[in-house]
Length: 129
Image 1 (spheres, rainbow, N blue to C red):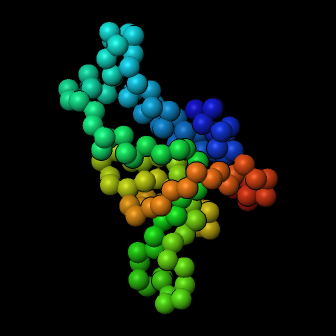
Image 2: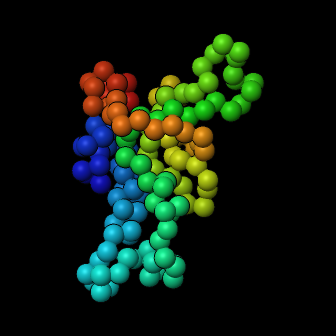
Image 3: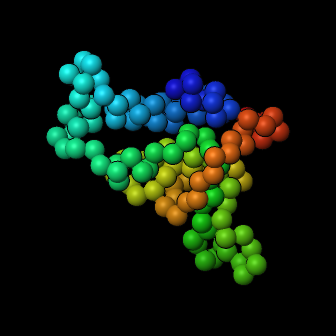
């Protein structure tokens, strides 16, 4: 969890999301404690497939979530809002994102990811604090 927060440049207030992501990563890696099997496969009694791992993105990276509410979207207005990737919710189709403008966690399905970490810059870090 600590490494994820430091690598992304996020504040300690995001430690819950970092812990959930770290636990998922740990559960899809082989473990000597259970004879080099994957804990996820043992627990759910099924093999991991690509669909299970496609949801995993780089924690804290920049993400652009599509604005799907037609009441909030104008003809020439933005079609996406800037967010940070925080993980995903179990049982929900979508990603947990931190909306930089709204300053709250949102769940969105239509998201584009970039390998950019905006919180490493000091000015955005001050805004999040």
